[in-house]
Image 1 (cartoon, rainbow, N blue to C red):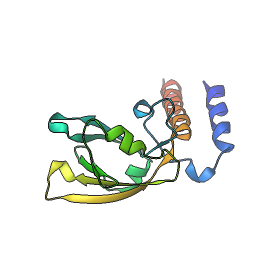
Image 2: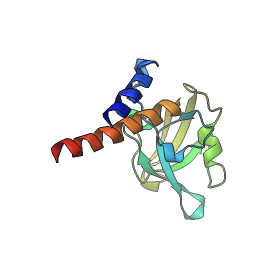
Image 3: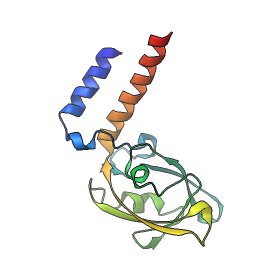
Length: 144
């Protein structure tokens, strides 16, 4: 396990160090997706898309504007529904490209926020998540 951790950190060292602590949600990514905002959401009744995960260290988390239960109302000015949310969040799928998310705090239409995020590298995120999981497992083994 330690060798695996060393290998993963070596992969990170070969890349841009400024991105080391940005994190994504791999389970929300398609196999070909290159970028992410670090938001997990579920499709709710009436076509609403509700935030259920704001991934620590990701662009959404770093903005400090998102919370579990927020409803995503529009992306880049386009109203969101269960059919278009994934395509709109992916957008041009270019790392560093901007996406503007309009959300309603806890679904309240009187508490609307507009937040701009820069998409982060999903591959780097997946590596960071794997490192975090390995570190957690090592911590458990060491403390046992």
